[in-house]
Image 1 (tube, rainbow, N blue to C red):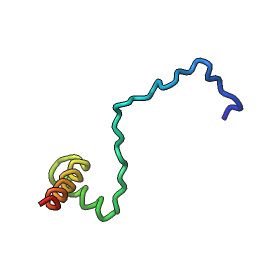
Image 2: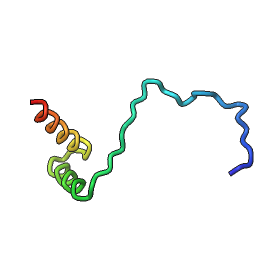
Image 3: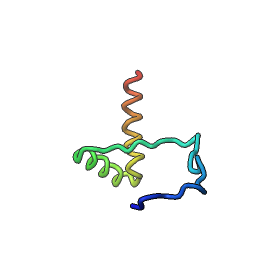
Length: 64
């Protein structure tokens, strides 16, 4: 690491996006991940799609 950095030409907020959405990283237990990966493989869809489907099913069952 340098002892000193020159920020004289820096632009404040250059990478700031007020409407950016934050995606939560989620860490699954090995057993849960294996189950979800198997379902994704069987259905030929992305892992995140399977997780979203399962969570939506839970949400719907809880709202009834």
